[in-house]
Image 1 (cartoon, rainbow, N blue to C red):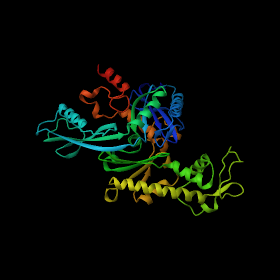
Image 2: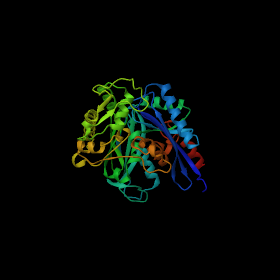
Image 3: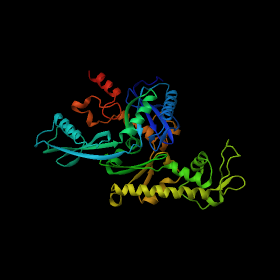
Image 4: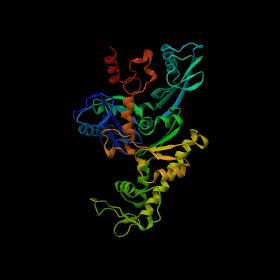
Length: 426
């Protein structure tokens, strides 16, 4: 069978507090997306989404990318970077212009987009995205392409994603120090939405909860766009820390206990099941867990109790965030949970009871070449970054006179995208 030829390659790096991961995806001549390689390693130099050690973060990013390149059998020079911290915030800007009943032309649409661009008020913050969601004709929503239609007034809703400038610049510098160009910095909730949410869900209304190691992002979609976002400084790593503190054990032991034996749902047999604190290859002379038996085993019921107590705290904060964004009661609906923290057994059932809404776990879509180990919620944002890159959504700041790049990371067209545009059009 002849090997497929690829017309474009997309590289992505997701910088989490628990792991740093990278993926390389190719676009074939017949338009199919295929994962060529992926890799990950333990995170260093990143704390709650912020770079805290430049050298350590750079080394971890380079290592993760090299692992993906080795698996892919090819290298990348530029990447799309996921950002989960940096004080992410979302807002929607609405703009209208007069058409006076005539047919809408391409120039009218461009004039509308330029008018929308001028309404963006970042208030000293960095604009990561400014994307048109949908058009309106005389106030009526749901217009995908208004060209050729008649209207008195043409409007548009624009989704703007803001972030603190300094943390984004630190993240960009860490990637550049790893000898990689940055195509764009992409807000993690936006990337995760590409991987986990259907177009219909985004249109009808859905809440997406991305549970990372140290940050949980709560996003609300409706009308096809992200309407609100809240970042909670709490994640699955805090549950690990609570287990380690309660039993007086090392953090890596607590993490393994949580992943292997932890659950969000208690069972009547938990109190009779004793689970070993030490795993295969651990130093058996290490610390004995508080309350353990003579074989350094603890009751599974105690572990589950700690997990559920801390999950209650997290779901309380998620519920408050959803309520503050109006996603509650009659305006509530489906909740999709993703991220590494969503891999905990029984989480969907626990969250559904706590939030009073239907909950499902969001995973990456079935992509050709995606390893089974990376088809989990913990890698949804990484896969979403590649899907976002392949979609290459319009940014209103690249319309008209601003087609030249404003910045090399997330502020208009990146250098690589600019070069491709020149090759394709001149």
